[in-house]
Length: 514
Image (cartoon, rainbow, N blue to C red; front, top):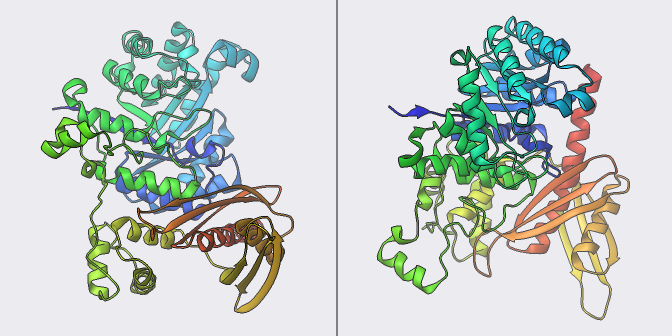
């Protein structure tokens, strides 16, 4: 029987630390639920003591996930560990993940601790943690640059105190595959009690070797890998979950191991994360990039028509990518629409939510000749991520040309009341954004990032706009969807404003209750 490799997903913790990838509570929960559908073994929900927001997100995910182990990161202090315990109390299977740096450079310059002090602290906190948690993981930060004999000593010490998972991160992405395999082999051969623990790896991608190093570690005996969807993370990111999993599945003849991942949920997971963060993957990204299953060269197309295996080593369906055209149209009934939602894996909507989605579908069907699964997925994802709308885009008129200044007349609805404003700028988007900023009266807002992409092909494709704004303190991400890119862009800006107000209101309520 094949060895099972456990997948530890840290998209919500390490991944979210990547610039521009922050998520609010609702978005984190939505991503966590998708990770559970993906069947990752462990979801690292955050760093509980890092902030009140992180504590709440860990607690929320811990309370909501039904089948997945939920972990929180903690430093090697009693306060960190106790805080993680409080956040994880509602989890079906809580795990503490505490860490302490072990390389000479980290001990001297960051921790300002001697090697003996580090050993003593790691062992003491392992013992303290085991009194609170049934499952404890220890990470030796910067393990790949740690003196081997010292690392063996630390790992032996924490395992003696009941740690059952020892993680040896390549924190700065410094290792090479052969070196990393020898590194794991050294741990297996030189830590006397390693048979009582699972070896885990957490590899960063600074040299573009994150996935290669992870696979080398698996071949050398690692039983758990830590990774993120789309490979997001600090600096150059982490080893990408989808690449690791599909490499193990596609080349089972080489690796001869299994995972518990439902690979048909990979594409949806990647797409959802992109929608939540507004950070797209490059078109040629392995597994989930837009070009991953595209064939343009004539010789490739000829081969594909004869036999898909000539140029595809895995199928689009194996990662959940479908391009089927819907037979539904503007004359379709709700029953057929519900059946389509079920076939796409969305069967948990309330009757009220289905009615709302069906109405949106009807509006779209009046605008588009052909509707694809991607169009429906876009509507569903927009619905899932919706927050209370303080402001709603009621209508807009844009007057523009290459010989005049653009004028944008925007009318918003705020709690039932209509407010209207006009602004001039160099283009329709700038004028519209400026008018909205003046109407919402939220102080000075700065546009940080803006982009539009087509959901499907064709001149009548839905455009999905992403906007990031800043109030000088935080960055807020908004999304908009429409067959008109100006409409989508203005909706995205209004959504970003609503996100800002929602987050601020939520924080104020927490402060009042604390």
